[in-house]
Length: 490
Image 1 (cartoon, rainbow, N blue to C red):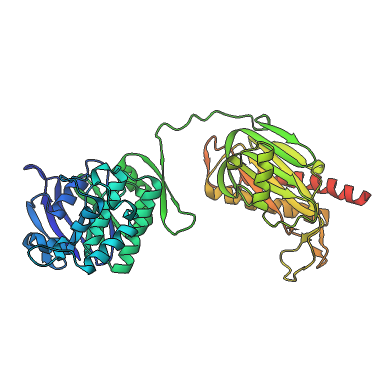
Image 2: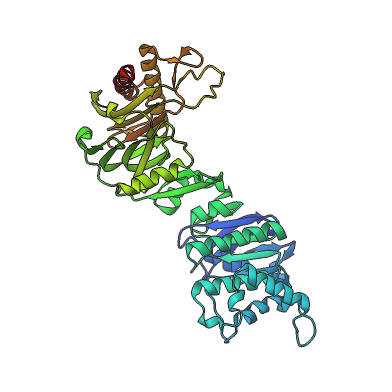
């Protein structure tokens, strides 16, 4: 659809764009990325005809851009620039109606019934129909941007050229506009070429991107090139961490200041406050910890400060455990956005809080353990009975700097240690009468201070893994024994 070959151009004798080549296929959303001063706006003006081409050629739909008349361009290409320059005092509807000018016939260029239907449709889609009679100059910057988008769509172009389309828009309207563009692209086969400032927005909405730096393309390809942290760091001169979006298979980027937050050594076992009663256990740390967990609240990988274990009745139905737990946290003044929360039917006074110094590492482990619903995970028979009092909830806090992979390793090490404890205690799955490996509702959390040298591994063959394993084993043995002794007395 768009073919650019050996493009050279700029504002003076010294070209800003120097020998750029690329193609955009029909129906593609192509994003142009790069830092300020890289030449994005210059390239945009060369493609839109706002600047003369010194060398090379641009073809649109197989025709040279330079050979197209203004009317032919208007029937093929719509342009939405950053700044809205309207000299006359038009209403919103009149501005949008200008998008149909190239298709109107006759000397007087009257608006047909078909034109009116298109104008009404795009105004509704862009959410500007409710102020169609309002003067354009009285609108906010974001409202103007949406009106001009409606005008561009009213042209029913084959190609839409956008320069920072979400400029002046808040988050809500930015995503509304981008969703609208994506829908129009899919339904009408629209080809979109857009300068985008936000790399995360580009990753979510574009099909391919080009990274422009000092007038030349550094890379052109699918959005997964945005996972190349070193490339982005070289171009943008900032520290970048790429990660995957949690819901769509697209990369998202985190920017990190070069002046990292000062790391102050901590005395882990004295860096938290413990609050405990019959209803809950609450550990509040002085600084956030990097955590991984399957807890009810705060699951996944997070930075958290508050760690809770709530007691529930053995007949708790679990209809909406997240909502229930957040309500409990709010009642106790615990901020849910910085908290992890587990629940158990085990008596909380049987909790074991275990501290250990091993391999020059401080580890704190909190375990509540009941084995009434112990299970053998290797046995495929299913127990349909209502769950009994049980659950082994384990929280491990370690003064170490663990990568995301090491956090997963730490989970494995803690689980192996818990299973070893159950084996040594002779805990049996009451349904299958085989050796238990855990309970049906176990929860686990690992929290690391992220201070010190980065540790990429924490499996059972490492010093970190063995330290975690030893601490979890000892705490699980003691907590399980306390719970078992209580039940034996009943």
